[in-house]
Length: 155
Image (cartoon, rainbow, N blue to C red; front, side, top):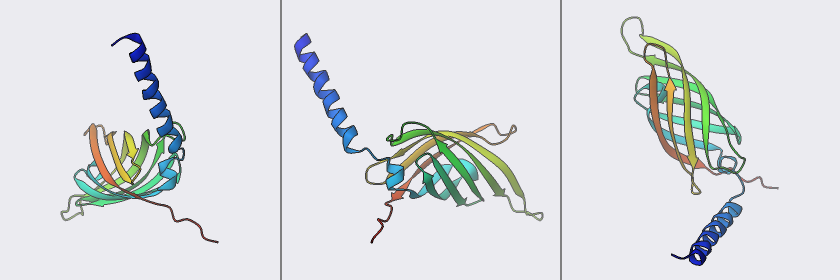
């Protein structure tokens, strides 16, 4: 490929990228603040269902419950206002119930670091690693779900 064709290809690529970026200026977390997801791993170790709500474009609240536990927490997202995939950090208070005569409840703080994506049609996905306790070390989570459109205010 000669220099002229390479230059034309690069210009077309960046022009297409800029058109896409301009057509999607609002943050998808602002358009779709409420989400429901299923996860493998995470604060309940196994599988769980999660509800989350973006209070702002960079801050969410979440609750979840699984086969052996439940949790609630917050996450802070970093990046530009219009990014639809962003890194995050969080803090979640979790309880795992192992049963037994004494109830077998194991409370702990789950501290995730991960990456979150929201698609145009509402697909919601994230991948994270987290520390649970010095005894257990690092743990992970894969979450996939759907985000719902915010209702438009009527006059």
